[in-house]
Image (cartoon, rainbow over the protein chains, first blue to last red):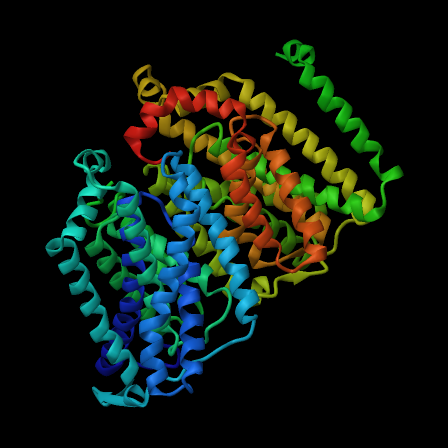
Amino acid sequence: MEGGQTITLAALSITLLVGLSRAMILFIVTSGLSFVLGVLRVPNVAHGSLYMIGAFAAYSISALFGSGSVGFWLALIFAPLVVALISLIAERSLFCHLYEREHLMLLLFTFALMLILGDLTKIVWGADYRSIMPPSLLQGFVTIFDSPFPKYNLFLLIIGPLVAIGLWLFSTKTKMGKIARAAAVDMEMVGAIGINVSWVFAFAFVLGCLLAGLGGALVSPTISVTLGMDHDIIIEAFLIVTIGGLGNMWGALVGSLIFGITQSFGVLLWPQFAIVFPYLAVVIILTLKPTGLLKSVW
Amino acid sequence: MFGELIRQKSFGVSLAVFLVLLLAPSFLPRFYIYLLAVIFVTALLAMSLNLCVGHGMLFQFHHGVFYGVGAYTAGLLLAKTSIPWWMAFVAGPLAAAFAGLLIGLFCIRLNKLYFGMLQISLGSLIWAIAFRWYGLTGGDDGIHGIPIPDFIASTTGSYYFVLIVLGICLFLMYLILKSPFGSTLQAIRDNPERCAAVGIHVRHHQLKTIVIATFFGGVAGVLFVVVEGSIFPDLLFWVLSLEIFIMCLLGGWFTFAGPILGAAIIVSLRTFVGTYTEYWTLILGVILILLIFFLPEGIMGYNYRQLFRSRTKYAHDSQME
């Protein structure tokens, strides 16, 4: 805004769209975190690491198939599955033996998992920067309000709502989803009617981590994939689920929208301190509404 | 109070340890003296956090910020102004306590996880400012080669300074915890409802605790500047905060000296394992998992289990423990 520059309506709309597409990534990642929080009641600190592994796995898979369009689409499918497999192994081999213990132990375990996965990523992929090209279909720009807007971000704007609808259908229409929702409210009762609670937990954990992997795979063409992206996302994700209401999927959506949009408007208004804006928004929301915007399942 | 203190066996032990540490520079190589100084700084930081976490059951998730504020205040004053060194050293903890008061005023109205999350958010604001304001803070690189007064600039000098300040701070913390104020704080931890019912202003009390804890956190920050002579934004990053949280848990967060043990273990591990491999966090993670599975009492300490039994009902009700 220095130099008497005025902000045009077009610039505002583009900023809004960029913020929305960022919010879609955030939503996909945080909906997974929120799901685990809701059912297992554990803030999964390793969630960001799984997101990072999703991005690295997407890079490797797409490189395996010649970095073309086919590679990208395969990466989008298989990278989340790789992440799901990793989380399933961690859950069945170690995590599931801790469900009877204090919650703090579960939290500590996810912290240990974050430390281990972070270094394993370093061992497997190294500390270099990686980048992935979006498929040719999604390369380039479309013109919206006379300004260029990346096609890939448009794609994100479509995927985000699809994931939201999918999750909503899953949790309201399928048996497994209903069990998971019931488990979030009263775990003991779910166990009492003869459902294997341990497997419900495993399922919820793996589904949550799968979403982290999907988020990582989706974000990989828009940023440079590198170590440390786990640290950045996990704090944002925790704050989003907190302002949205713990364990509430729609809360994750609302929180992501607020976070993404304040972030992109921050870039427009004051680029140097853009990262301050979303944090300020969180402060304001938690000051006005201490338990988050929507109802928490806790 | 002093008579009771002197009669305790642990007092004699700590006095002996203190004396040995005073003599340490005469028989230990320089590297170990430096390592001990780093352990002392981290131990003070963990102890200050434990005032909130262990004794007050406040989920102070971003305590590292106050450490960083103390370090940045002292470091910037030393590097960029010509005020006497002792004023910079006093300003550090005061700035940290002020930041603690400001952030505490916001957070104190919330409970448990929400308290921690709001604190992470507010702390990240401060981190973002330190990280981005290149003109003042040096941004990502931080500031190195901060002028330290001559008498504490050497390894041995800084070692003695850190040791003496640590001793004074630990003694003060002990007095605070043994005072009626400390007892009230622990009563609030064990049963906030009943404390409110007998007329204790729970929130005021917790806010005072936060200010005290952040003050000591700021002292640790100043000591960091003395030992390292540099400041950088990682001091304020949440990963460090989580690490000191782990130190408290590891050593035993319902014990007085537990965090010192936790800090010593983690700092030594990082230093020694770090010389053999660059993957020390991997090893830390594996050790943490081994502790969770095989030595939960080693993490929490026996006292924790005793306390936890009596608290199981509340833990279940609030779903956060």
